[in-house]
Length: 229
Image (cartoon, rainbow, N blue to C red; front, side):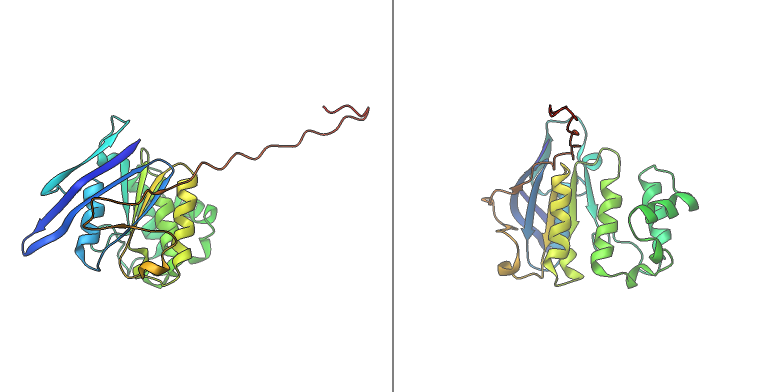
């Protein structure tokens, strides 16, 4: 499965939101996209997800019959998919599980939090979560939605200057076989882990490709007669 954006641009009520931008990303790929702070960065993510119709250009998925809204999850987009900061974490998790059509009762939420090492923070206001924990939990919730094959992490760098906190997380998801796009705006280009795609460009560097991690194998015990089992 690949998602291709071909010279996608968007016009807003007061002028251009997004200059023509191209990007191709497939399963196991990790792409970082960099643009100036503002709504254009999020607009590109929403276009990738089929939630904004481009003014010019096209976005389409290859190798699947599913539509972009089913394939693509936009994580923590400001003013769009970011949670209400005043809600407790357990409420946010319950809402996200329900959105994914998964069991979302009190026990289900408690189980999910425990499985993701976040049970002690169940009652914490979302705005008070550490940035790395916030991004990790929202990403895991999005990755758990049925049919999602592309994750778009919307400007995790707006919460922290610790690049590795979100870059390592993005690599992990790519190693699981998902396509991952990280939108960035405030991190200096020199601090990014590899050359990013740039908003407003049609010629982009290749995304990093990550092969799925091999499943652990059990060592066979040696036989007592000296012949390997």
